[in-house]
Length: 447
Ligand code: GLC
Image 1 (tube, rainbow, N blue to C red):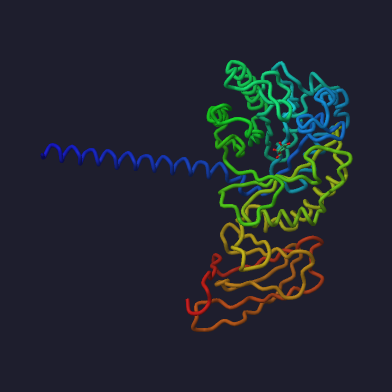
Image 2: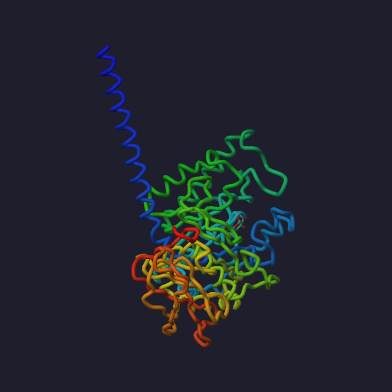
């Protein structure tokens, strides 16, 4: 009896110790992920680049042949006219740095399988198959790093041009993985070799996978891919398109309406309606639209990965330059309210985007359009020490309305915005608070 009890006590003890260890291990993992994600959380803005042979013939990247809008042969024929003749990586990197972006992600290879570097694998590349005849990525990554902009590698898992890849055109496939596992094995080796080339050659700070939806994590060997990357660079960040083995989420084109609950996320968005260059796509977003949605994304805790698509010769269309330049000027003026901040306060306190300084003692309010007149902040328990129009310096006064001395419910804060202080796009106010921001979330009344 006694022995039995002793046994079960020691069993319990071992169990408790094991669970404790497991929790401690999980916490260390979470801490180290948090640490490596810090630059990304602070970065807020990245520039995405879709560049490839699809810039030649006014067709969409890879999807145009997959969806049978153009034959694969005609699509691949574009390679003959992909020249990179005006490609100036220093100019690209300067434009990107001037936009305020802290990182940039370029397509090392899209779903069409054409690599932009000198791949050792027996497959398409700008070196072997285009008059550009060179590795286009090395000089770009060098120029980015010179300017302290982090280097990201978009890498398509899908390769519709590879004879051993199951998928090809819409509604058809070359084969099924289960029917020919050896063939899939060959493809897997090929893609992982290419990925290793990207890793050793460019040492990306961030990997941006795409196309994971065509196969499962087991089929892609996502875990092995993640572990391989982290072995070579433990601080590399991996986007969420690796069937559950990434670090952050990547909503695409659609601005979230309510605040996403992810720790880290990044909205990727085009400057017109296409990822790559298309002559006929003139649906350019205006700088105001981009800045407004950028403020919205940052306010809800995310990053924006804004896409540009250079022409086949490497020149960047003036509309894209304009957007990046205007965004850059606005970012410079409002740097304090964007970079290194935290997502803002819950909606309802203020009808517009907000952010908070890291120490939470500054609250930034973003005023849409050309707001003037009186704005209101509700449920702010802090004292406001000072209000400044960012980048303009004008100090504003405020008035607290309806504060009842015996109630803990804060009054309403009204701030008058005079005419003449407005930014061309979005005006930002900095509210300096007495203490870290504290919000009243009750229903009014006595509590
Ligand atoms: C999509 C598309 C692709 C594009 C990517 C960018 O998943 O497959 O063409 O490169 O989104 O986010």
